[in-house]
Image 1 (tube, rainbow over the protein chains, first blue to last red):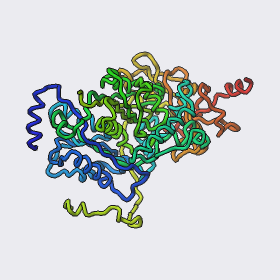
Image 2: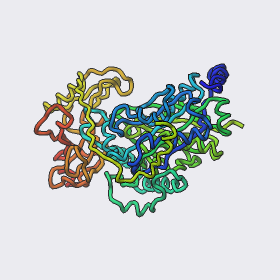
Image 3: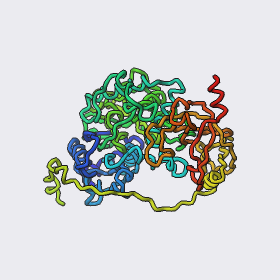
Image 4: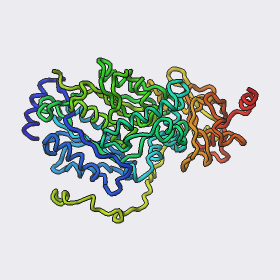
Length: 370
Length: 174
């Protein structure tokens, strides 16, 4: 443990629950359809080096490391141990992994920092979907007795959710296409996005269905990519960034797995997580929503009660780049980066996991109170 | 590999032709016990019976769950259901993918069986001449189970759902 950590751990621990945690660095790859010339560790290494360079930290000064990835993408058990080569795990480090989107790895790191077990944390995640067919691979996360044997792919399940929203009168194919257009045009300003720019709504609606009522533009691209974030507490965070993005609240909730048990047109777990994270205490100027399918942005907007005053997915969101296991943590990173740049005072970041928005995480980030 | 060597690797220099590839079959060679609830459900399907289960609030869940989705209470009271129900949402699958229930265009559907309060996911296929025609499918459509000829105690013992014949006739007159 370094002198900074030693000194800080004592100082911050004395403040009890006032161990405020902030995002102080964020980096992501340029997301691509395929990176078959890169191993996972080669995909991850540049973003790890980037966040360390931004803060001037070295790996021996990181108190806790946590990652998110999926063996189902890599096709082998304990695949994340390979990526640890990119961190440098010798001498031994304090490390953990979640078989989830990196947003949940960030949650675990946040708990470690809040409870005084570390003062800095490196969080990263990655997804390399290109070696397989991710829409089919994702069927393996479903109930093994009643769902997985039918191989309902990710687009099919999202199509059922979309039709339910259309039947409920919440949206139509034209409005969904407009969401896709807005997301991909916003991504023109995002050099990391995979799909940048879009044809007009009319042109998109002439395209064939993938799984009706979804057309290709309603679905996320298949992406390879990685993301890394550094968290720090209190004065350590202030020393590492002039404008830390403070995590004012973070919570995650899950709903029943069976899609037929849930109201697919609503997201009560998002609403509950948002309430527990304090999202409804004051308006947010920015929201980065992890909505891989066009209808999911609408469902999340409604669950979060977002008004037109909130800028939604200025990065282009998951419709512009969707590296599985990284796209949720990227939302937190994008929201934090807006605060770092002084473009946002209070931002909401959301991540999802499972079919049809089954599980949801909400974080509220703020700039320094002046 | 030392740090120096690591930084010397120029990834962009690797030619496409240098990338090796090999087939990889991922397998999970485990056997599992399906337990008293899922086991009963799957055994029922083999005998052409669809079972639901009564939840903590009295609602009937189908497919049945071992634990209540809201209260997490352990559930026991199995309920036999008719094989008829109503489509609550659907999606037209023009290009079926490997291993899916049918190899011709079909609808995915959530079906709330009569006597149940939740919906079951499966395929929906109209008999000829409407097979393969999305116009034969809508939310609210009345459907019935089409059983597989060979049943093994699996969700695929339901080959798919198909529209109830009477409903089709009534709609034709409407």
